[in-house]
Figure (spheres, rainbow, N blue to C red):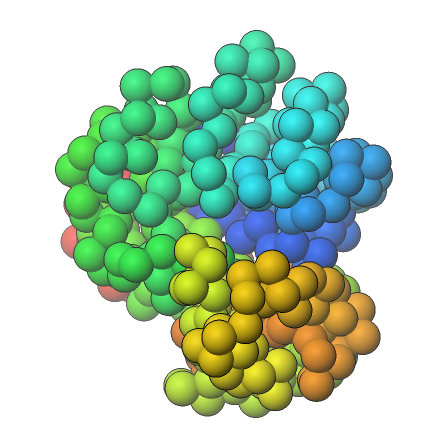
Length: 314
């Protein structure tokens, strides 16, 4: 069985994280992933602290395994969610879309392992100096907010820039991706889109069907003009947003155009006005299955590839 340093740090069986997908990664999904031996993560997104606390407690009611929270630092509720994470003493916090420096002392005082998503070497070095427990190097193949560098390019550079454990994310869906991540120097992986197919994932059936029927060219990136690019499925909304983005619409109107669209996709399956976040590996997701089965499957697929394992894999 493949294990690594991140398993020791967090007390998990497999070095697999579930991505922090806003309005998707709720307490039920997080608990299923944690029960399956990975690290389940409740996504805060743009939700208030009350929602996040509720979902943490849902997860706690379903598993006694480690559970994390993902905090999107652009959220207007970031301060209160950061406080909730400390109060609830989750085992780990992952962060995205910003610099978590101002919260890290409080999280560490609460015994929380802090694992920021880093899109660059400079941010990796800063987070290392500030005392992060691990880093998540997420390439632009991922769904949701994305950076410029691909996973293949980003991961080895982050590994070279830090002494901390590195988790590879973006474009990983099966054992081949897991093996590739380890060969690049990572000691764990984070998967988001693959867990959209989990039977415990509560997205609308229309959303799940889109993932299961996705093709290799099914995603596109919008939002670059505003400085916050997002990868999603090529839906009528995504195409209309792309036209508006480069058609002269004022920034405030463009921002408003996207507000609430993810919830419409997740909760209503609205093909016309919903934003269906997904990574480039969506075409590799072929069936719905329990989260625990997904984790076991990808790790068993990776094992034969890694028989001649690098020294950092046990």
